[in-house]
Amino acid sequence: MKDKVIISICGAAGAGKSTLAKKLAEAIGYDMACRIPVDYFLKSYNGEPYEEFMNTPFKFDWTFLKKVISVPINSRCETPDFDFNKLIRISRTGGIQLTLRRYIILDSLPCPFADHLIRLDAPEDLRKSRIKDRDKKDKTNSFRNWQKMEVTAKELELGKYKYDLVLSGFDEPEANALKITEYLNI
Image (tube, rainbow, N blue to C red; front, side, top):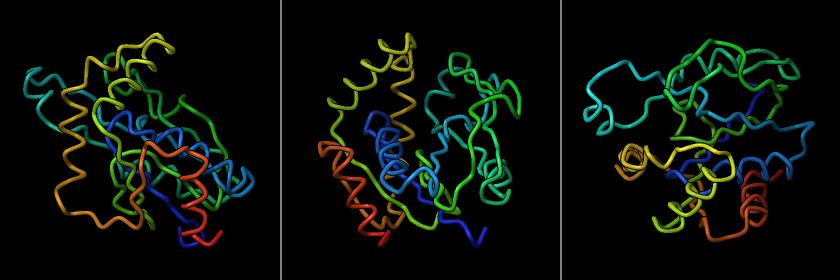
């Protein structure tokens, strides 16, 4: 893992993490960077009472993610296959296929083994609007999990993370990507 640089873009649901991660990979260059959508590494809903589930943050399988990205640079790997409607992992493979690069860009809660933590902030009204727009575009219903998304977002404010950069979700993703590449001196 010493030859890889892991950049964790953190923020509440709808802040623009995925868009920024894509723009950052583009800015660095696809021959040097890849984006891994960490939502595919969510831990499955295990059948606890719904209210209890909704009042706890999403959990991620960081151990499995670390295993997936432990392959050599330029190797092919893939995310798990995940059913986002039922919130369960279908299988350990079968998700998004990608080629691992030197710069690995993650979009989620802060990854515990990341080299750099970048926080992206946006107000609730903008985030809600983005989630609803994405649901409409993708014909999904992620907004039904808003309560759990907000409980998860509160994890970012507990003071247990030290962010290398804090960016605004109002800024254009290209401008934020440029700020990150300048910070990383790429």
